[in-house]
Length: 71
Length: 71
DNA sequence: TTTCCATGTAAAGCCTCCTTCACATATGAG
DNA sequence: CTCATATGTGAAGGAGGCTTTACATGGAAA
Image (tube, rainbow over the protein chains, first blue to last red):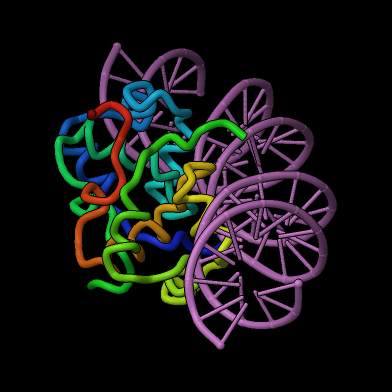
């Protein structure tokens, strides 16, 4: 599979909280594989999932996901 | 088709600039039908397209797309 | 070593995003 | 009326997001 269109800091944010991918998956109500695929850059989350992630970490989508057009 | 997971203000922003759906589609490099489908709530944009839309209008994704968990 | 947990990944299947082509309606200009 | 523009939608197909099942690796602990 090709690279995702957007980079992200999900792994860092998750690690800061001491959560496993499984923990995060349950909080987001998605599968562990989905969390892993997003962290490893295999694909981007849907917009609703991106919102859910941002809400969980209490920040803006732009603080977690980084458009390639910006550094 | 069911309703999209996220509401948006795309139609308003586009109208403020006097752009047709076709105009906006060309600026975003997507089809006119995609713009229409997003405006009419048939589906959500992908995360990369949401970024592109936000960048075009010079604001945050959260300023255009509204998670249903918030009013 | 054995066991357990965390992570990475593959396959198959379903649903969503986005495309093109096509058609319908409405509105305004001439 | 005729013509052009703007919008809404349907169908079919390709690419991508997400699921479950399953297997592999690596590290920590006993």
